[in-house]
Amino acid sequence: MNKLVQNEMMKLIAKKRLIVIAIIIGVLVVLFTYAQYKTVQTQREKLGTNDWRTILQQQIIDTQNRLSSSRMQDEWKKQLQITLQQEQYYLDHDINPSEPGAPTFIRVFFENSIDLFIPLMVMVIASDLVSSEHSLGSIKLLLTRPVKRWKVLLSKYFTLCLAISLIIAIAGILSYLISGLVFGYKGWGTPILTGFNVTESGLNTSGVKLLKLWQYLLMDFGLVWFVAVVVGTLSFMLSVLIRSTAAGMGVMLAALISGAILNNMVSSWESAKYFFMVNLTLTDYIRGNAPPIQGMTLSFSLMVLLVWWAIALVVSFFVFTKKDVY
Image 1 (cartoon, rainbow, N blue to C red):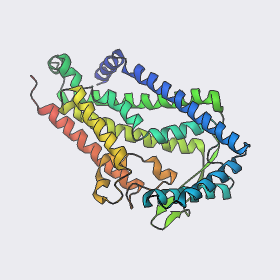
Image 2 (cartoon, one colour):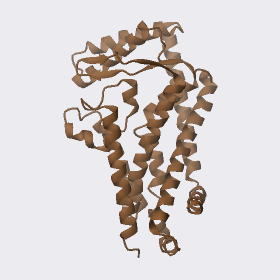
Image 3 (cartoon, rainbow, N blue to C red):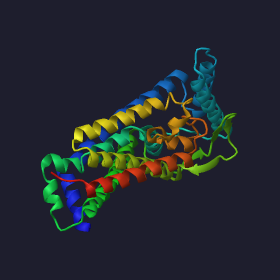
Image 4 (cartoon, rainbow, N blue to C red):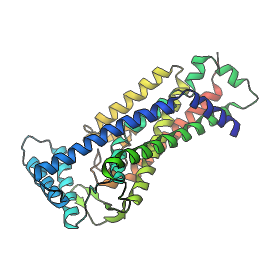
């Protein structure tokens, strides 16, 4: 098995896709760092101060002004009300929710990348692992080896999990190194609050806990990795079912984009909570954001994604071991 995994990793590295992904991540981190820097500079110039309390107070006033608009939809109004309560909670407890520094940038970057950007990077790898063997004509040579089919596929899946871990590690390292040039490398011990619970009546703060930022980031990285593995496994299944890499990528891309759209439109469609793409934003639960559909919880979304992962894995191994190769 070790030799099979090593062989698959060598093929993956030879395609240089990890290098391309690293370059894409680096470019986007540079762009996001610049955008964040300009946002901070604009706020400071507008308010004429660097005091985070004054900036947060102004954000609260801006949020209140937006809530007074009669044109706003009820869904957006509810989310803004929750944001307002969170901002006021941070202000009352004298905790800066946006302490400048590379660790804070990493947190924001991963929380905004969990449902689309990171899954897209993983999809590029996963959609090609099996289907490329068909397009290159090497599938027959691969299966004529004295190794059982399930072991061949398992080695590819292990390679996928290693690649996913590498992608997330690359994203974290590049985010830290690049953003630190602008915001500094300190802030791992910055206090941050988690445990906000969104209910029908509003924001429940009874379970709020104070953590250090490095502890919070461990939870973020774990949730991002889990989502990436689920999306990677689904893409892996499509790579087994569909011999065309482009077609497999197209199906998964459509699913991910539709999920990003559905998150803003499915509040009244309760059965949509069983779609995997509606449950990808796991970091929203620890941030205290309102779920796409009322009643969804972190444990529920984890269970839904786990079921999708198990089904995709079973289908992949069943089809690969049974189908004819020609």
